[in-house]
Image (cartoon, rainbow, N blue to C red; front, side):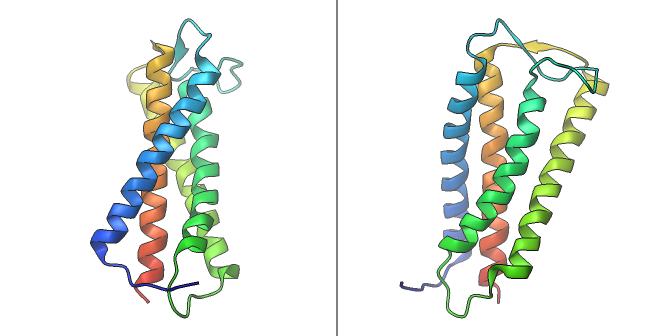
Length: 151
């Protein structure tokens, strides 16, 4: 296992690459979930709604990606004297997951408040799910690798 140093440009480039890859993969996954629907609600005004909405899929997507990708970023960052994953980086992974939850839920609530229940095409739903996944992947990778390399 070789170690290396990371410049800020390399960190940003790696985070951006991971974000784009996750956007494409998760956009495609979401496409297969919504492709047979006529339209997809962005949000619904009922907290116990049975309808699939963009944000009802984006919240668990963002939370799981934040937790999983923070562990992946930790594991794939090769630096000398890397601190142990437990407990600090495990707790950071939880922090990123809760932060992603809060941000995506807040965006959904604000959307519902200001825009209301609107429908979009399945293609647009897949694109927006991919964009959300890409942003989460980019930010989490950037934060973990930057934190590890500033030591």
